[in-house]
Image 1 (spheres, one colour):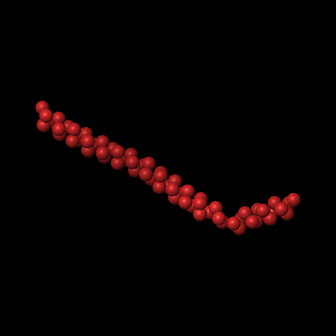
Image 2 (tube, rainbow, N blue to C red):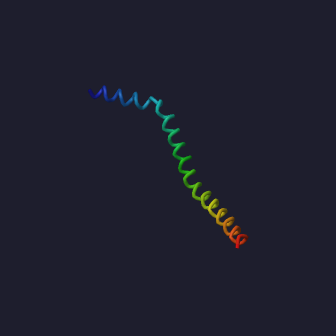
Image 3 (spheres, rainbow, N blue to C red):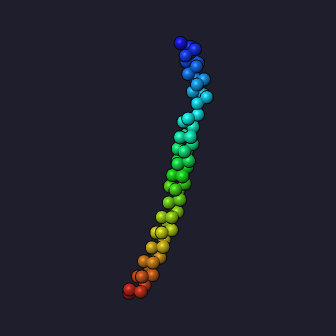
Length: 62
């Protein structure tokens, strides 16, 4: 029984078929994290632009 477990562990250590999947998952997580942080600054810039346009329109409609 111990030799079966040992052989399974050695085989598992040598196999790297799941390694690519883990690397792609880590890259996708990094991109998602960067996009999440980037969206905050983009949303603020868009909000500021619309606020500026709105205040300029108010001065012309009075």
